[in-house]
Length: 152
Image (cartoon, rainbow, N blue to C red; front, side):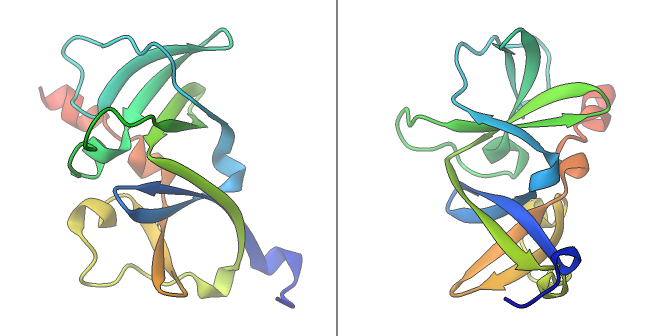
């Protein structure tokens, strides 16, 4: 790639339910294995619980539930991507963490019309890669679970 650095964006890639996602690296705080989740009574179903990560209380968001995907078969180990929004820490529970990809800003397209509605509501666009579609996650939309909670 001979793009200028300002025309490149770096994504931390993750897989959830077989779909490849990209999170802008500027939004990712850390990657960790979640340990001892504490359930939160009356929380929306996508809130997996709370955990203590190096002295910080982190809200764990189950990305499979957030994206309306089925739960994994068996008790597969999961990873979490740590993000922050409005001073709060969150862990996005994913299936597999991938690599950091540098992609041209110009390669990001609008969501295809046939993109699954569960993906479209949290997507900031897509990158077409060799045989795969990388869905760029809009972290703020992913974390926007409050309206559902307030309606309950």
